[in-house]
Length: 152
Image (cartoon, rainbow, N blue to C red; front, side, top):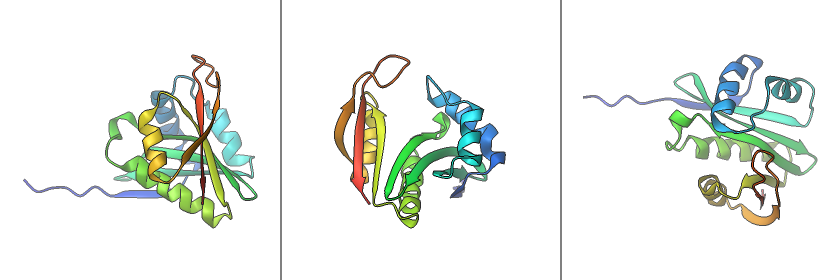
């Protein structure tokens, strides 16, 4: 049997990507963002940047980032549950870091659930360190968020 090579590509998010992004958001989070939240960021928030990752021309993940002067903040990142475990998150996050650098950011921060060890390990792979904790940060269950930071 011949192995089929799957093509992945990271690019800027388009409005047309929102149906796929909303599905991934809803599958990934207990308190997902609404379509209006993404629309606001894409159309009105001048600090906001979104990238998607495609596999065989299908959107299978996305990441939002706000960049204000030299500071970048990840707002959300998710890979479709059926596509996890194939290094797509690593590829997407690497491109997000490159994009932030290209926009002049010199540092990046994010919050991650204390229980989400898989995500924490991904971020640590890129040199991120835990620098703080936000107690009761997540509204759905009161879980603490770890604040992670890296110099770009």
